[in-house]
Length: 563
Image (cartoon, rainbow, N blue to C red; front, side):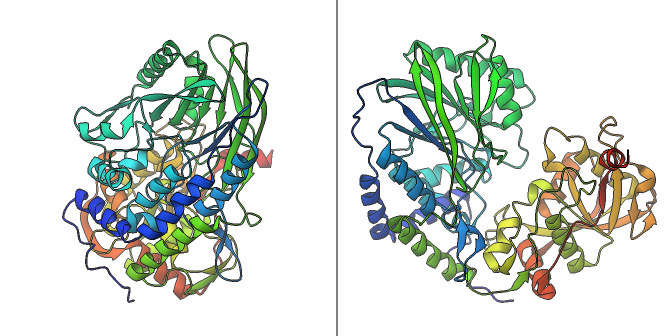
């Protein structure tokens, strides 16, 4: 296959990547000038109310550089859901009718789309400021490529004048330059009400690379509670009448914060990509409610919470997820910026938007049906089959956490195949992870499966998807003893714990397994990109009809159904 490459992409260091993005954005000055005009048009209307102010909190999370619409395509091969230009229309409509708007982002702007690989988050950060975002939490993916890239992108986007980025559990002493843009908290006056906001970043994501920044709380959740309590006390002392935690911790941590730390009125959450159709209410230690919000991902919704402050208490008037779907027209000025950025992507990567490669007969999901025992996903089966088809190994493995998303029914173009395998950054090509092969004994293979299953109910990112093998497990068993050994098959034959099997993975899995105590041998890093491997497989299938086939079975669900 041929693909256009940019001669300037092979950067020797992470700072260069951020500087390169800044240079690219300077060539878009005229387009971004239009976006500045949009920001003025979106300005908050003067407050007209003669009674206690109703405050409208708008929120998004986990947008992952999804500037363009996605989802099912229209007849022009354009996506119909989400994207920044459509979300800007929703935000504009709210601002036009409601005077006291607070607009927050719960983190993860980086990674997930070729907009990031081409521009390193700079356009999204700039447009967020111009569209009137008041603050953003620092997400774990902001550190995927280290603090140099984050600092380079922020410098290119903002210089010294920043959209406030918030995180109270970052120790920046090892990289003080980031303190130009990141602080623990802020107080914003909206409708005459002083609203205190503090940020939090999930501390235990093994995929990111924050060093020398330290994300406090890894392995010590009680420290997160202490930090949050300190933030609440500081904000209240400084006059905050309402306290919001802008959290990129995930809902399990959010629930613990809500139940443990008094004084938090609202948690605007992210990290899980969950869609909360209504706020989750947790009673805090003082017997008062704390609301937890989360609005999916990729600008598919804008959450809208209306509340008033009555005798010192937050009183919710209404909550709604505002859909950013086919009924929403993109804001033309922002869409113009997005279209110009897409032309830059095509210049580098070829026609990833309009060249049809294949057709998906059905939606290819990353999730599985909770009421069915099969736990292999359509995307897990497709990607692992592609890896094994490339190398001819006995087995192929990936992890749920390394499959970013699925593919919708209908025409498949290049961007549809990049987004599911968008992790990593290969400096030579500007794409994602390469693949690798190794050998592993049957006993160590079982250990790798058990490692993924140990996090069930907490984090399913480590749950392994497979090709060339099958197994069953019981989540009710103790961690480390969940695989039903008699069920494990490789090409239909019982697993031999003493035999050595060949395996294909992406390079992230190859690096993670030894870190988790799984021994492998004859590790070979290949030059093939996971994106190209998946693309070759999809093109060869032409009509892609992949459905979960029971490679992985949760016996607790099967037994429940049989009773």
